[in-house]
Length: 356
Ligand SMILES: *Cc1c(COP(=O)(O)O)cnc(C)c1O
Image (tube, rainbow, N blue to C red):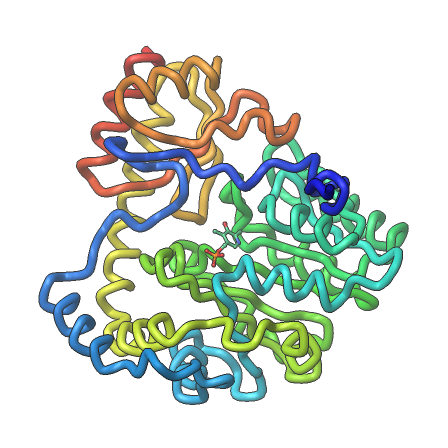
């Protein structure tokens, strides 16, 4: 008789699945989702558009029209190519798989996005985390020293970083890109709608840089679409490990339709940026709360006791993320997604139960 324990990799047996808490009945401020839905008329038009999609056909392997729309919407240089993924999580997996030579390493600042490490581990790449400074800014000297020591295949720079919200200093980024001249540098701009700064217009100036984006944080987390922009010399190789038909026809059609109405999503992002400013000021005024500057649609906040705060908010039916166990630099830190004005008011009321 065979059991999974005989067959499955030991490191996989020891893992737990990516935890997604049930948020039914909660104000959901744990996953950086856009709280707004589409205007009903637009949603109805989208429905008609999707009704015309040929579900009996496999997706186009390279949907040129959609890629052109994405390039225009992103302001990508003409010289850049674009690769699509089932969310940027899938693109991270593809990059890991394509670079997983024996002994190859992945390097990123920590605390950072957990999928860089997770995906490295699954592809048998060694992950090297370089701590941020206590104020969550980049330790560029430590990064450069670690790059020299480890000669990583891949360097990830989330611009801005999750879960800290930090938009790294551009001069530091340039120094790291220059130091990593034997690596592929992946700049992850998942929060670009909230940061409004980008390396993409300059992506073709570097021979070792690709820029990754997603529609998830912009309000389309449910359709799962990420994209990677860069020189075709890189993208052609990564494309070889892409599962065929990875972006389904409904996602392609929804993205194509909504890119023609990007102003709707852009104005939702503008509202969330305004809400971020208000929420940051209000939280910073609470006794014991330290708010880190954020260029994302979330705030990293240090409080006297993150567990008590998290549990109290749960009781008040507000779901946030307690990140305090993720890394020593995040001791007693929680991450609050910026919601609508109403959601943020309820979040603040719940925070005041603890911080007063
Ligand atoms: C949310 C997030 C992503 C993942 O995006 P998907 O396209 O939804 O897979 C990538 N990078 C960072 C830094 C994120 O926070």
